[in-house]
Every structure is written in structure tokens, then in C-alpha cells.
Length: 176
Image (cartoon, rainbow, N blue to C red):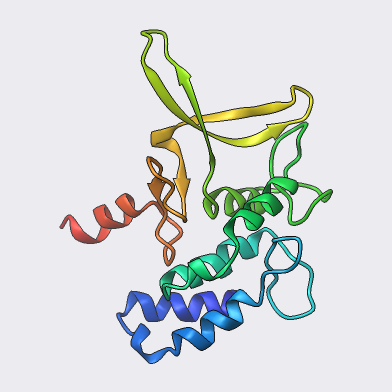
């Protein structure tokens, strides 16, 4: 699956996606979503959180992300969180690691939390990690710190080819 991502990304970066049968590739990528909502890398394999990035970003680059059930994907990722210590694993009840935490956070739309700041103003926070001990989400990021491949309103978008915030990619390549 990472090879598909690399190929689609290379074609996207070189403006050559017109060489791809987007419907056929999109169909194959959408077939990676399993009953649990997670995505796998090839047929008959278990789902893995990292494929939330590889598959979803490929679908976004070919304009077919709307072909998968994003709500089920987000639920799968939430089920892969360590609710006591934080972090995200490859699949539910496995050990968490930085790799899967990054791709689990970057791919889906995070959970919005509205709160009131000390001056009485309304502030939107993005909630990413659920803590079972306190029975609520406990890791909050101000909205300007959040990143999302699905471009959740108010959250900075992540470029699907570079895996970096879009504004960073634009600064690197277009501010010269």
C-alpha cells in the first residue's frame, strides 16, 4: 500500500495524475476498508491505523475520499487509542508507538471541543486522545495547532503527498 501512496504522490507532485484510472484505483483503495472501519494494505489482511494515512491520502489525491465511510474510520482510530496513557496503536489493544500515533492523528478529522477562555471568549479546541480514567478526552490542542487530512473546519490542512501542513508546503515551495 505504501508503494501505491508513493506512486500516486509522485504523480500528483509532477502533475501527472491524468495517467491514472482514478475510478479503478479508487475502487481498489476503497476495498481496503474492512468491517471494523479500519483500512488494510491489501486484501485479506488486518486493518492498521497507518493505512488511514496511506489509503486516505491516496484517495484524496485522486478525488475519491468520499467513497469510504469516514465515520467508521475515525471510530476505528479512536478504538486504537491507549485510553489510560495516550497514543495510538496499529489496531485495538496493541502497544502504542509514535509512527501510528502520528498517522492516526494526521489522517482523520479530530473531535471539536468548545470552551470558554479566561476572558469569557469562546475557544475551539481539538481533542485527540481519550482518557478512560477520567471518562473524557484529555489531550487538547488549540485549533491552530491541529492538523487534519480531511480538512476539518478551523483545523490546518495536511498535504496528502508531503504529509506536512499545507501552509508549510506552500511556504517552502511558493514563497521564493
